[in-house]
Image 1 (tube, protein in one colour):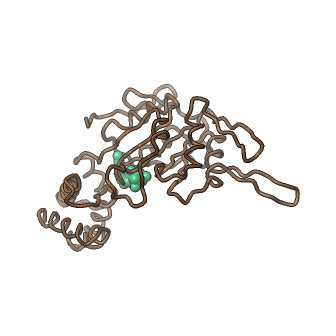
Image 2 (image 1 turned 180 degrees about the horizontal axis):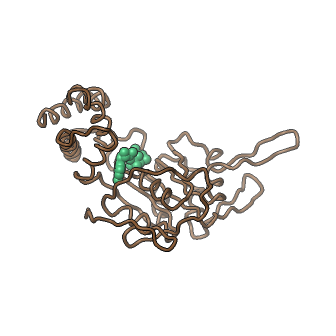
Image 3 (image 1 turned 135 degrees about the vertical axis):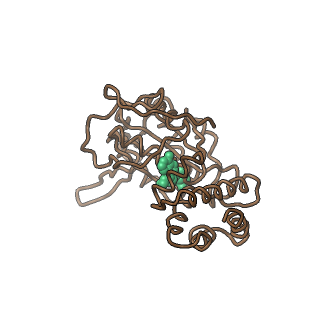
Length: 294
Ligand SMILES: Nc1ncnc2c1ncn2[C@@H]1O[C@H](COP(=O)(O)OP(=O)(O)OP(=O)(O)O)[C@@H](O)[C@H]1O
Ligand SMILES: [Mg+2]
């Protein structure tokens, strides 16, 4: 993937990322607007996400854990004053929670919105995590939202048609399913995949950016040490691509390791932040990789 330096600027009420622009929401009192995010520009995925947002197109983000899928969307929501909500469809989320449900009290039945309808009506951005794990009923409901008619019919309730507030945006994310490292994941149903007009594959951060991110987020100021740790992560990812290990090495994991290595020896710190998270076979391979660098 090419790594350009993307400029992010505010121009005439829009937030511009490279060639893409998103209108800045003038309303700042929404409690769902995220706070400032520590985000360093990396690659061109942010520009493409911003383009899709500007075009009001739903986006599917595919990438290993910790590549910055959630952060990218949260960052754009923050800089454009848009509410941001997340839901995880890991198989436990029911249609009731997602769309809504009928409740009963002494005066009769009433409807309670689920997170999707709430976000659609409020005009917030909704990120659906682990979309590939969603129940078929939820997938079906998303079809009508993603189809050209862009609406949901509350057939369980009064047949009301819900059309999204113009500020509503839909994002979905999933880990790549090509390999089966993520427990419980399955490929995204082809019909649902096909309905996302923009699908972006995200990669781990380029080495120089990842070093900065790890130093800033872990508080470990020893650049030479962090650089070696990032090299370990790169080798581990290479080992994963070559099927020598079956676990990934995320930026998140690197941050945890670097934070602990500010006080402990790197191998000792890795025992509690890296090796302990994987099976004994993978731990041995990772230990050898760490050994090569320290
Ligand atoms: N561009 C970036 N700038 C700053 N930090 C970053 C960047 N990309 C990733 N990170 C770091 O990686 C962490 C993980 O990112 P994020 O939560 O967005 O990953 P994800 O792709 O959503 O992972 P998952 O699949 O597990 O949900 C962030 O909290 C941040 O510390
Ligand atoms: Mg995420």
